[in-house]
Amino acid sequence: MSRIGKLPITIPENVDINYNDSEITVKGKFGTLQTQIPTVIKITESDNILTVGLSEQTRSVRALHGLYRTLINNMVIGVSEQFEIILELKGVGYRAAVQNNEIILNLGYSHPVNIKIPNIISVEVVQNTTINLKSCDKELLGLFAANIRAWRQPEPYKGKGILYKGEQIIRKAGKSAK
Image (cartoon, rainbow, N blue to C red; front, side, top):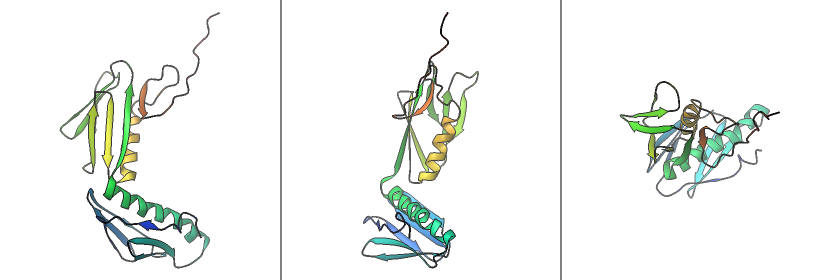
């Protein structure tokens, strides 16, 4: 049995969970999330505590136990509290703005970069160099943040690029003069 899989999931008061053999739906203050679950994963609920179990004990099924427990837990946390990722733009002239459901990034290219914002993600730009991303879907939020970051990944010589908040870039020494 998985150590993570056997941990119980506490359900907050404002979260409603509906499940059957193949799907789970979680509704809360910040939205509704649903996902498909394999039929070998069994969910039981009692006294606002959700437990994830298995119907059989094969190696491939046991590998899914912790995964689906974590996915369901992330859904519960997301609809009740939301997830947040903060990106920082470091570099001369690097700026961001939100306009008409798009993020417009000036990253030193000859053209601005326009990225469409998914409906489930809210974006706020602070001081032109900090992007706050919030969503109830942790997976989609991480993919969107990585997509933005891919336009200008941090480089080790000057430390310029798009960084996650608190990320440390290991700097390299440049060429040494003779």
